[in-house]
Length: 149
Image 1 (cartoon, one colour):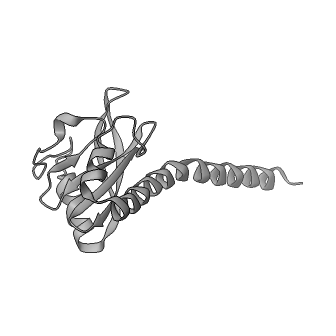
Image 2: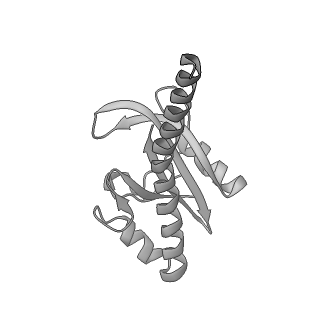
């Protein structure tokens, strides 16, 4: 077999494997948000907020977890940083000046769901990294789950 063809095939295999590996965390984020939406529909807002605020609750999967923003850009629930609860995030900007919470909430209001990319400090690595967050509007809640890229 031609060496060039082998290199092309190996390259395609590597790209395919990388796509599968990098898709899993995004799938985890979407699955957790959808699980939270189902929990909300079955149990109501108060129980969902209480469950999401548990640091080791069912909506935390390692360093991937669901949090809630309101339609007014404030944090309603957050399992990893309870100090954020009640804070208005309208003007919060990433290091590049992107108002990512505002953008995420507006996306959810307009389209119902989607992804927002921004940069944020990774609490484990203590450095700013690229992050993407999946948002889903359910009634007056914006359910969200972010992953570092």
